[in-house]
Image 1 (cartoon, rainbow, N blue to C red):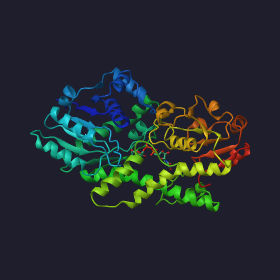
Image 2: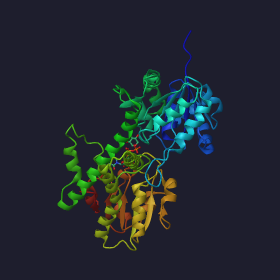
Image 3: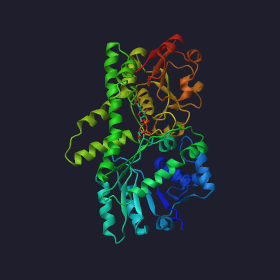
Length: 451
Ligand code: UDX
């Protein structure tokens, strides 16, 4: 007799949860997606993610229509039938920088009520090291036999589907080694179907794929995730520190990092200087790591420096512009880019928003625009900052413009047209993504970060 296909529940339908649920359903499993947010569920039921993510909607529509994915707000029926339960709930940060684990424990406790013995509970949320151990202790107190797996997620927002189909590594952390191969087989089924899924998502994947599966201890898996993000944040703050020195000495940070990054031991990725990192992961993961290290009496000074340097960048850029404009008071400036990076509508901890707020505080009249994040940024912007509906509206009669997100529509914008639309001519490339000579040729004054 053929082995029964496992049933899966995914708790939480954010970037990580919804991507996981959709891909498992596309791979042929019966999947329940659980969320308490009725608005999110209503969108999912119509085949629409409530956030912008390349390729997710066609997949979502497909698995909703063929009923492989069933969205629900109740744990009751789905968890009890499930062989695998993925926890993908949020871990926001507390005001002191530590991770707020209330959703993590609430989900684990509620799931425990309904889980059948023999079920596997897989933690994908980013949690401080030691969290899994506490959840295992909780599970061990019940009479049920539940296996706990730490399976951290590495996907990036905006490219979540592509990152998962084209993964570098899948980490499966466990203390007893049980269920590890079963969890790996779920991922292998997705991997086997990757080209067909990519085709439906209208994404192009490279033909070959060399993703690796790592089996580790539970605590190592928890630390792998935050260490990877912390190291990427460290590279960015390192590049930004050198950029400040390049500014003082007439060197160009892009030239520097192109050559430094050509050393295979170092690598070019995440050495782009600019307005610093933002989003739902790096700021929170860095502060969470500092705080979790402090709980174990380890002073992670290096990460405190990373966070401090990052925090200075929007102000540093405002100051550079101010030096050119003499004063910001009364100047009309446009900030183009409110999303924390291109390809997403997410404006959490967005450096563009921070820069707009600093410019406003310093007396400028600020107008902003983003092709996807206008709505999500609105509540984060200081009172009196205008939000434009088009680039043209934003840049019209400005003294200066600031590019804070690398959206293709900004990169492709006709610079000569821009020069005519502006009143002044200061062009601040806060992402270092423009060709300096081309900007100058259009009659604009170029300022980058470390260039
Ligand atoms: C990150 C990790 O890359 C991912 O592996 C993890 O699972 C979640 O956190 P994400 O936050 O989606 O992903 O975005 P990412 O593309 O890593 O960018 C983070 C921030 O760093 C953005 O604000 C980006 O603009 C900035 N950045 C990135 C730089 O300032 N310089 C760089 O060189 C690279």
